[in-house]
Image (cartoon, rainbow, N blue to C red):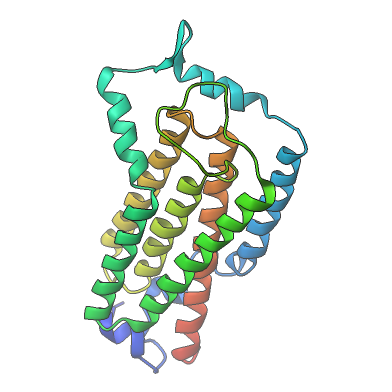
Amino acid sequence: MTHPHLPEAEGADAPGAVPEPVRHPPWLMAAGGAVAFAIFILVVAGWTIDGGHQFAFDRMLLLAARHTDNLILPIGPHWLRSAMIDVTALGGITVLTIAIVVTLGALAVERLWLTAGLVFAATVSGSLAVDLAKHVVARPRPDVVPHLVEVTSLSFPSGHSANSAIVYLTLATLLTQVIPNEALRRYVIGVAVVLVTAIGISRVYLGVHWPSDVLAGWSFGTLWALAWWSIGAHIRLARAGE
């Protein structure tokens, strides 16, 4: 099947004008309820944690990342601490905002207005949802090990994990709907997954989040991205007359 060029994929009205990832996107049916399911996970897991329940693996993994005789020293070579600090910055508000702005600029240059609108709406609404969850649950930061970076906000869910998943995975999934090359689509998704995974791991390594905070952030961000993939696919299929 021959795919259209990127700008044509946004504005076409005739059937057959949308690329294959839009015509038959994975999770098309399931992603429609992803936002509701994500909220369910946040509320149930969050209230469980807030009610005093602690997962055994939370403490175990935090301690496993430190030397037993000196908890301020993380395991691994001396450069790993600096590397983890650099990686965790990729999930911070500054870098994520830059990533969104740069992507929106590129989409505007290509006149991909639908994708730009979806990216903006998905990332902004997702960030607001994460902030709301933090204030509702109000879980304090772990105190099992010393923090290796300064933190001031609440702990659940991990904002870095959730927001990086919301931004990088949403960008990746929505871009696959307008990228005609299959190999490039796989590469974009792969890079996003690696980034999100590394950022979440860095939060535990630095001692600033419980592992369950990171798992909740990953889950919510992934489901959020899938939901917006479904929204984008529905709009494109409707515009193509299918």
